[in-house]
Length: 411
Ligand code: DI6
Ligand code: FE
Image (cartoon, rainbow, N blue to C red; front, side):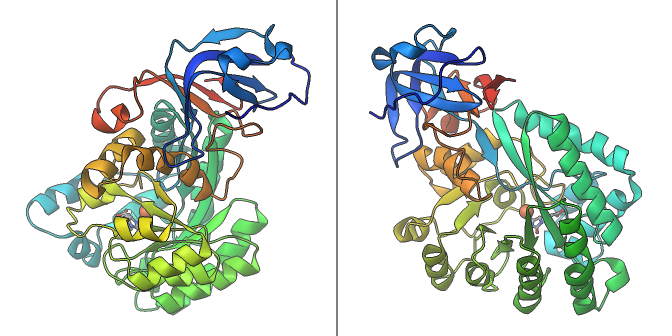
């Protein structure tokens, strides 16, 4: 049982939650601690241990009765594209009539349909359409979301998307990490000139986004319908030159060796990974990057090839789970449902699913001060109406969140 001597004196904004089962996320079994108490102070976890061992200095603080509920770190959704305009419901209908995702993309629909709508939307319209999506995640206990650009595909419109993402983080209590995904698709004005577009991304869009402090990481869609490994590498070089960490959409529809490239650039994560090879797994294991699995896209695209979960496990690669919220391949905003699907489709254990949306989700965003219940971590914590951790993976449709605190403030 961990305990620590308090280093600060308790203040008015400090409180204790007692009678909880704490899932510390410090071990493969989640490090459950029953009849526990946690002390929150200055927006951080100041103490955690069994209730009977609560230090005297904290005993006079306001007390919240956790009534035996499960307390976990708040959730992180480490891969979303939730700033977009318009709807692709018509494409869903086309797919029901037999068209594939690739065929729709090649015919100028798909991502480019959303690019058109996103370009046409003003910044305030884009914000108004996107805000409810972030609110939906917040209401499920998500305290940190990543938001990618990639539906602007021009200097002006990529920056517009990133500004909207930053504004969501400023207006809601949750934290937003922004990722520039200008290399998501080829815009119509660069048709047949992918290298010319990559020049624009590297020479103008990345430096401008970095200069305006609009971006926390850079991503590329490395795929036969996206960008080649060589083009992805040029984007990574520009990201590195601008001091930005990289991530990659890799091996989603085919194996392009993008994961190994990301590892060479010491990237944060490789995401999707259904077609990941042994070579890619070994590269990830060596680099320490996070494998982000996206069961929503697997489900919605009716993919049949499973990501190599057992090989990732055997290699000790940390696994995260996210929604991939986007209008084309994962039109959903339900992170607990992704925990269920990760278990049902990918055979993750409930413990792996929890680690995937807490500790490992945070790591995929380069965050080490959140995602665990431990002294010194940000007090982004969630109390759940759950009798056991696996219940959230088993049953869906009822929101089990009892209370969320972000930096120690009740939401
Ligand atoms: N992979 C995906 O699944 C999404 N983007 C990507 O690179 C799909 C985005 C869309 O269809 O709008
Ligand atoms: Fe994605």
